[in-house]
Amino acid sequence: MIVRKHFRFTGRVQGVGFRYRAKHAANGMGITGWAKNEYDGSVEMEAQGTEEAINRMLVMINRSDYIVIDSIETKEVPLLEDERSFYVR
Image (cartoon, rainbow, N blue to C red; front, top):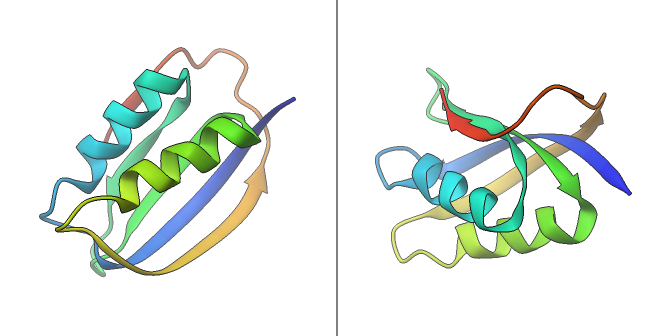
């Protein structure tokens, strides 16, 4: 079953390759969506795929020596049927 989730990550998540690591992980797992930096130092991301693939993507993002995630806010959001890739905003 395909789901779409919206995330907000706080911690050391900007300037450490977070968005590009997310894009690489998503592309390898067939996940669509986007990631962008916010002015408050957080990163927002939407990911669409299976629950298992999204969870594996989050594990892969968190394996970096430079990224330190202090908190993750998450909520399910409506699917985007026409989205074809994951991109960095």
